[in-house]
Image 1 (spheres, rainbow over the protein chains, first blue to last red):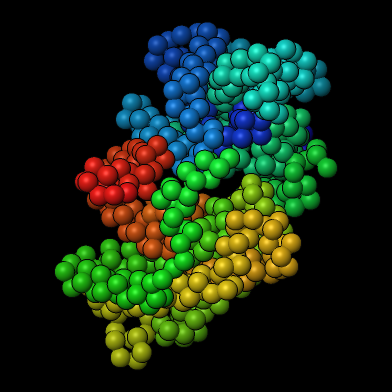
Image 2: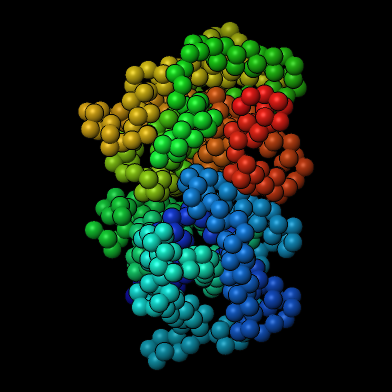
Length: 285
Length: 332
């Protein structure tokens, strides 16, 4: 029973981290048709930013996290505005190659700037302890991760379905020419949604630093996991990504607890089964 | 609309793929053989690098059949290579050390895995297909890690000694026999692949790449064609794996890894997909670059290859070639 509960909490936290990183990729891939394999690098930039700010510069954790997320967002916006937007109309293979090349360069740059060792984010005292919920005590960090994940999911779903910006985004995706003729600022919409996705990836990199250690190869190491979540959840579907991330997170955690000698076998078996069952996404028929 | 099509016809890529192929199928393999022999004779101290280059070229050639000819983007091609390598290694260790029979076993293993997984994978398209190929290769990797008794796990499969080639040529330390053996297999399979691609069957597959719906309407059995092609590609990848196992006398986990699949894809795009020769050029350029840059510093290597990839996308080789020829005063 105890193991079961631990698996559930850890799996939920892991799934939330995967979701926060994957949601931006799901939007760029599903709504903007841009294959961005450098998405893992944004998570890395966010995590490294927070680690360097808290440890080297001695900033407060609650100040360093928004700063690192903002920096990642600005980096995403700058890249989109300067280079990546020219690739929207190119073939998928071109996009794959360019963004993989970008990841390589970022990995090499990270290693040159910060060294090959694993980076740790200094947590404040309130997060490194545990919280008594009455019937159980849980690590505060896990609770924060789960809470932030739920908040991101709700905010993202609300933004896309309920706000003016969401309407613009969906219009720009459906038919950019018509949307532009109707006076919707397509370029701003695309740039802002890309930047938001990058910022969220940065947030995910910070939240998940305990589960996925920050090192230079981070950008490629966890890219496959994020792509799996996007594929299983269905491109462009926020609810689908959440469901897929939580389900796969729990499966991966359970197999680590109960059958660690099998490696990632069960994770990928589950992925293949789910994809074969619902090729267009978990929540789409 | 009219001007659009006219302009499209004038671009170099349209000319290259649209024109009927006139060169006989044996010419390119013969050139390859000559270049390979000259390289072997000129660089006797680099034979290890050369045989690795030939094996990588064979693997990328097989990938080109799937990605360039059939238009199925895959990131799990290393699964076929690794299966061939492990099959050849295990066969040499437990059954019989003859290289040619081992090569046959590797080919069979690669083809069998491709036929089995293809029957499942080819029901899906696009991004789903891509991710499923990743899943298959990762599942195989986990299984290989688990089956330590057979594969040696993370330590790698070693301890087998290959018998002499054709009962006469012993594998020597300098790699003289290994390099020539790899080159010979590469040339033969390159010729075979060229014949497959130029056959009516190959034309049907290229038609499926260009327009699946139209080929279905014409009565082509799309699934069967792609399945056969995937099996042929699996056989070639298995051959490359078997060669790698036999010439290195060791099989590591990295022969099944995601990174190896991704690297092969990069090589293919670097050289140009869909023309088979591009696969060879890309593999050669990439392997030589890797060899020189990574001997300096592995992270510098990443920087170089990353910058190169971005450059190739921004300034495509075909366009750069046309621009160069214009600057040199040639007409297009």
